Image 1: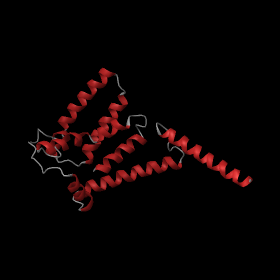
Image 2: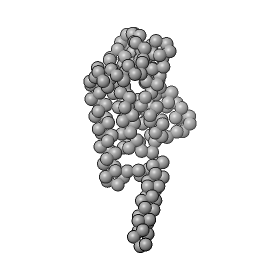
Image 3: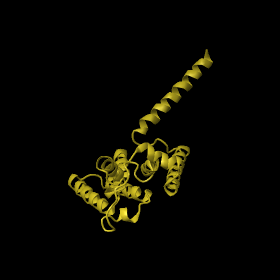
Image 4: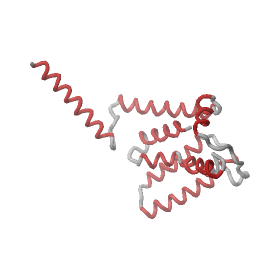
Length: 185
């Protein structure tokens, strides 16, 4: 659900966490995969392994809280990161044995993560229809938010996009002045 996790990041950034760091939001949204996929490739561990469990989630939350408290970082960013990590776990429609590891039992080694094979099984063969529909819904919601912000005049209203907005307005003004000058000659 690569695109779906990105869509969730977009939804979070455009709605509740507009001022939070986009990179931190993206890392949090992909957090379980960032830890589990390399462990799968290098060590043969399950692709949805320990980092997809509530135990590791709790450990990550505790460490993040300690870091945030010591560094007096933005608590909203911490809250956003936690919410996006949970959204990843929810979006993956995990089996109970993965989510409740180690209490539910041990994790079985899975096949090696091959990116092209996963994309094919997910987007071409439709092996995971619930996840695919969830991803489609997330993308649709993101598109609705983007279009609603665009048509209500709220598009490009914050952050680095502000410079893009001013650039576009300057270009529009330049072209209108040039066309006005052409009409006078």
